[in-house]
Image (spheres, rainbow, N blue to C red):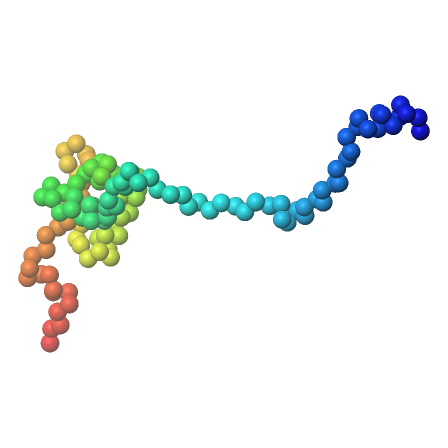
Length: 125
C-alpha cells in the first residue's frame, strides 16, 4: 500500500458493528385501550329513564301525541308505537289510543275504577 492509499483510508469513517435486528414479535407496540381520563370541568347530564318519562306524559289528562313522545324520547314513530304496545301488554297499564280532530294519534293511560281493578283475579264460588 502506498502512503496515499493509507491517508484515504484514514479519512473514511470506520464502520460500526451492525446492530442485531429485533424479532417481529418484540417490535409490536401494545394497543391502547379506549380508556382516557375524563375532563374534570365537564359534568355529564343526569341519565334519565325514558320509560318513566313516557309514563309521566301518558298520565296527563290529555295524554300525549305521537309527536310529543317522539320529541321527548328521540325515538322513531315505530319505536314509540311498539313501546306503547308493550307497556299495555306487560306493563299492567291500560293504554287508550285516539285521534284528535287534526288526525294526530294520542295515547294516554286509562284510569281504572277501584271496584273493577281486581275482578280478573277474583274467585267466585
